[in-house]
Amino acid sequence: MAIAAEIAQAMEGSSWVRKMFELGIVLRQERGAENVFDLSLGNPIIEPPPQFFDALRRFVDDRQPGAHRYMPNAGYVETRQAVADALAEETGLAYGAGHVVMTVGAAAALNVVIHSVCNRDDEIVILTPFFVEYLFYAQNHGARAVLVDCDDDFMPDLDDLAAKLSPRTRLVILNSPNNPSGAMYPGSAIEAIARLLQRKSAEFGSEIYLVSDEPYRKILFDEHQYPFPQLVYERTITVTSHAKDLALPGERIGYIALHPDYDDGGELMNALIFCNRTLGFVNAPALMQHLVSGLQTVTIDTSDYQQKRDYLYGVLRSAGYDVRKPEGAFYMFPKSPVADEMQLVEALQRHGVLVVPGRGFGISGYFRVSYCVEQRDLEGAAPGFAAAMSELTG
Image 1 (cartoon, rainbow, N blue to C red):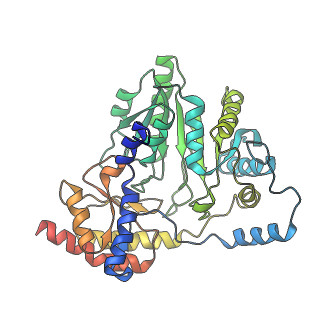
Image 2 (cartoon, rainbow, N blue to C red):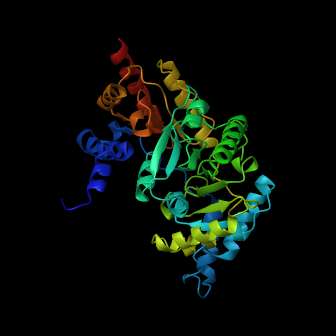
Image 3 (cartoon, rainbow, N blue to C red):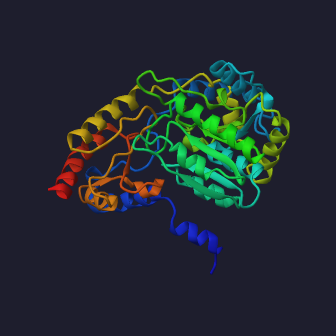
């Protein structure tokens, strides 16, 4: 075999999102692009805010000497301080530059965190439904993924979480607003998780980190406010990116932030910086660091996503789907009208609509719909949703 057996196995069960995306290319060639409505990929169509382009023009015009050279592996101090200032304003906690590492997006941030704190065969607890890459990130570093059930509202099953925490648990990954459900965990749920982690850490004589994966925390609707986990749990490690809030997914810029009151923060920060370098990321892109340092209080206009959420929710409900209205992000996770959601996914494909089966996110019987697409795609998909429902339920 030309490649590692572990990688071959991982590739076999890899992302359903990518499979649907590649299928969309084939279907567009066969049927014409105007007859295919790809709601599978979470690739923001909103352009970055005007302030980003203003900052880019200023940067190009200034031609600052040394702006593209190496910097400290943690990133420019001024960029880290800008992130810290914004976090301090949002949370009321005393963040400083020394609590922040700039990273190559949230994916790199998660890999750096896992590599920094997990020994081989340590356990990473993942709350379902989940972003499937979490499984591969754990595998990358020899850790074992442990999956926790959720209820019908996609909230964590705390009894199941309690049962699955063990002396080997090092991380619990919390993703809110959630991909794929769009559900935001309320403060009460986060407080309950924090109390459980505190109790279990004391019971096991270990440190369990709560890793808060927050790329969607500023994509909120209906005036919801984000409940910061670090306000109730000092062992919180924040990872995020500007892929969604500044619509810069291709620029790969994000950060890790440690709770400023965490006692062993200095040691952990040194490990994060070391792993950022030795995993091959070295440092976050210099150009993006220069630009986002002045954009920490800027966010895209989320009203477009909210309007599309409302439209799609109405379409699905009218067609008879059981679907929870999300508080944030730009996904919905409706229940399939038949137990095997692949039957629905295939029926939708026959009508030119591409969605992702729920099994790709750890829960069968559901499917993910992305509405960070053009309005014409949502409108074009509407008849397909109704037709597939009718086809499967008679």
